Image (cartoon, rainbow over all chains, first blue to last red; front, side, top):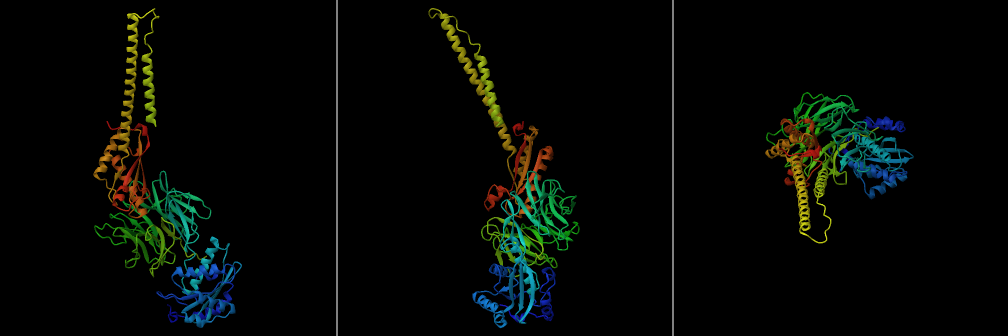
Length: 439
Length: 199
């Protein structure tokens, strides 16, 4: 359990508190970036938070969602239970918060939300300081339980998480994956799952940073095409910058300007770069000399690439500059080693690359630091493949066979806590949306 | 289908030929008051002639059938050899000896059947990365195509495609399934009725 003394109450808190009432009516956009209220998050600790019953329409749903979002975010310990909620209800009705009780329960913060129309008024109290630490109005839009409504509640959770821990949450994010002959999208909390592509043999979905364009590869009569699809309009566009044959594993650059993918004909498969509109000339990136070079991932600054290459025999993960120069073997090559390493995904903070590595014939998820190439194994149960980072650089989604069938799981790389995201057999090739979902 | 049509037309031809043979069967003479040796001889000759014609017709049909069977069997055998699957080792696109023998047989057939075009589909087992396996399947298909074109078959006659691990023929999770899935499949895309065995 959390000890309040581990929380550093910054001197900034006082001024922040004084400033808050004036900012209470400010738009959410004005308060999303750079706001911290002084409850400093310490790695390895989780501040305890009590979420009061939410007043207003659909309050129970909102409270449940916010609590689950905090729980799934792994940075906050939700203090719950009937007794806690009863006490909270009583205090809320008297409009008097008794910080002593919450302190005895090791709570660092109390969150009070009241909804009126499409506005949610959020108060975050600092228990140690016995003060209101943040007060903001945020918009909760759309019909209750609609996709829009759920995303706006998640965005509120993420914002509150930022006020409490200093780090924006990842609840308002979505994950693409493949099951059967379609691409699906699912909210980070496992709700709202629906197909986003028509029937066809499809693989390797990827998000553009805009959050509504996706790319994937699709099998046609003449081979595999990279297809761009706008999730808002449903419009599709086949990338024609390279001839037919093999066009697979698209990835958008972080600035959304470029699309990098693997193209192969009869002399191996290499990476090519085209404009993100999927038109115009393709520039060749790798020179694999007849080997396979696939699954590119950009560094957060867009200057580097990591990719899978079979140029030295079995597949390994390499890095290069975005123009293909300065190629470097990233994963440790063992001579005569039959195992292989592939499917890199560069972490959003730039420090790590997640990849899959075979151990005794089974893939497991690993990370390698770019600074000193320390390898860390994150999974061991079943076969685990195709990692994709959440925007917080802490959670990963991946395919796991641990239940006996392929499903998408989410792992907190810091605590090792895993949860099952999908619940229908055969889910694979997850891709986590970019950005934190903050407007 | 086309083979059957061809067989049917051969049968019709043979039947027509048989009818033509039977046509000049001798006309019976005006009936005398009673049987005489001439009329008995004529009757016997007529019967012999009909029997001969029947036999000829039967022979002709049998011959036509045999020809058609031979042709079809030859085409079937050639098609079978042309579409025979070849197999690979794990994470490899190297052609093994039996794969080369199979490709050599295909070369003979392709040389004898200039109107025939094929498509090579590369496949992998379920191990390995789903994405990398697409490239590996492509390399396996390309390896077969390269062998054929190196031996004089025009590249225009051979398409390649990769199915990665998406089209397994065996769905088990052990080597006996995996070894069946690491393969190139050969599909005839043009001139299926023109396939001839190597001379």
